[in-house]
Image (cartoon, rainbow over all chains, first blue to last red; front, side):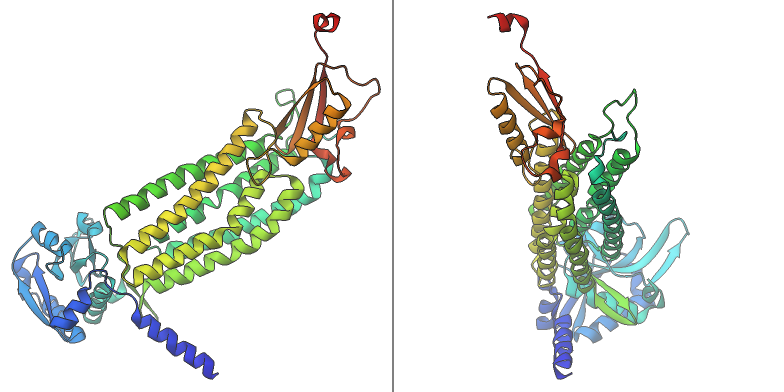
Length: 148
Length: 311
């Protein structure tokens, strides 16, 4: 019985140990207490879900968001190079960027049924711990994200 | 004489092999579905999933060949029956393995070359966010279990039936733990932040698929071009066939003995000699235990040209 409990605890500990980020995004954020965010469309700054998502990530990481300016494709390039940690924007459901960056679950969907436009966060590919943090935060603030 | 190409004494083991292959397909499908549900973007998982899907090819080809061998009668159009359908199935399985193995290796090397970082995110289960990698590991462990048992059961049947298709499948199943271990290491490595572990594990798995394919391709083409009978587990010459050759050569020392294989059966041609005066069934020439005598289906004698005899 004791052994089983110890094994379960060990397993839970292991569950939390993985995954890690190949480029160390989460460690870097933990150390500097800052993460960088950019909006694909500056008009989104006033969207309530964007603010709530950033606040939720700040709460979970105990870090402060540092806003960066920019728009469109160059932001994804910076994301891919690790110069930005997070890009939030409205993207089509079958975005051509889907293989180059990792998208979190959509916070909300607009557009038409044929071409839905999703408000969601994009992270650098492969930074799995950081991706999980943003996914969890997205689910925490949006019912639509929880349902995906 | 049997109107189908399957020897009478193989009917019972063949029926057992068919039942086993249906179970094999069932368990392989459960693995394909389980792995498919947690694929994600991992190269390791995609490669392992394709390998598992390819695992359906040998049992399906075996069942098609077995059906034709058991139920299709000799006819004017097919006077020798369908004993070579098994060899054709073996060839198709070999081509599929080789082609897909090569493609998977190319993909894995490209992913390594371009330093692709695989994204494996989280999933919600019973209200808890769980890293998808844990489910991938569970699926990989599950995928190791059924092939191990099926491979062990297939091996003796493959030897009894002298069935290369079944034998290749048995070896692939038995060796599955190797690729499974590579898969597990790939996912754990990915979890530890080693981006290259995923593509490297995928490359190792694809080399294994390619190796299986090339071995099977060499053996199956040897049969299709009337090469000497090959051993079940390698491209070496079959020991059974070597003994038949020695037996015939001992009785007809001046003759040239040529052997080939049609499916599980051996056919012998004894050139430049006259047949013995008494009537003999081909099985008379089988050198070893009677149980395997069914393998020798034909011994034909081709006498020397008259001109040769006079000289």
